[in-house]
Length: 370
Image 1 (cartoon, one colour):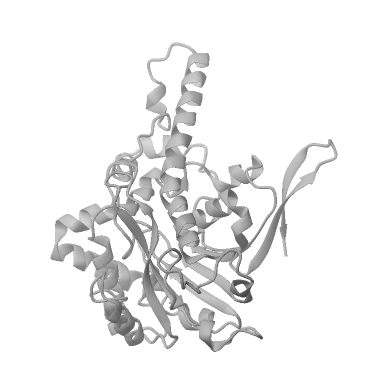
Image 2 (cartoon, rainbow, N blue to C red):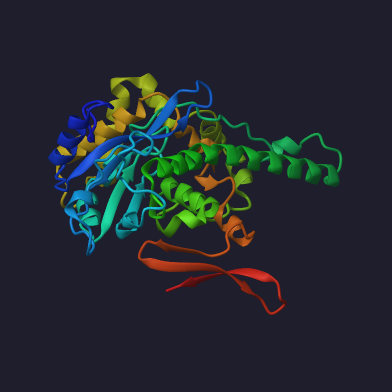
């Protein structure tokens, strides 16, 4: 049983699951079109919860406080609002994206608080290939040039540098392919719902993906909120050497590059369920206000979505290196000028990243924290 539904197709199960978890806000569950599978050509969908705005802004009628209209393109009578609909801008869309190996269900304690903010329409999503969203073909990447051993056999330092540069370019193309899997789907999801601009909130890998989306589509993001995002810093310079120096490091690295925890769980049956239980109890049992029954539901939810067909989980080694460092760190991309001006929040701090001139006249990225 899923915390957010008895089965992937059960809207009633979604309602019952969240209500049993204590969620009181009204919402609708939608499978929102977000493109087609690159391999099969079949339509794909992102699982989405759309919450009622409890306190609409002045002038917002009760009729439009809840999205019940067909998606764009489903009917000529569509009144859900679009890019050119001024009424649609009276509500602020806030989109919540979960982290790797997770799903929107783990935000269940946050839904009521966010949905009750005046004028906010909350959208909680399962990233494509995760949670209850379509499990479509993920572009499996092939990386090279990140291991010191790949330079063995080259006769000169110059040849080694050339080989490393070529491999780096190859790796960046592979990273972009993997990012596109999620970013293109999110953009088509936005188009399907007719949202003009939105506030993006992302946790962990969801923070990384939300940031990449903001870089690619800055005109669609009014603010970016990040909670413990992965992929910001560069990995330590000696990360590879340290990993290769011990058998544990070599084993961990090999596992990271060749498999995923979900693949292991799929093959372990009931033993896998016990492993998830141990993980959940170890991580959240110390919370003061959490009960055993609640932990059991979280464990059941995580195990259920983990053993669904393999898809988006492959982002673990396609976008991230072992140690959960980004293959293309976001900090480097800011400094490289991939984004001009971007406002985002990390934790309870507000950060403004802008391109400012230096004394030499060159452009430099400057972080302002307040």
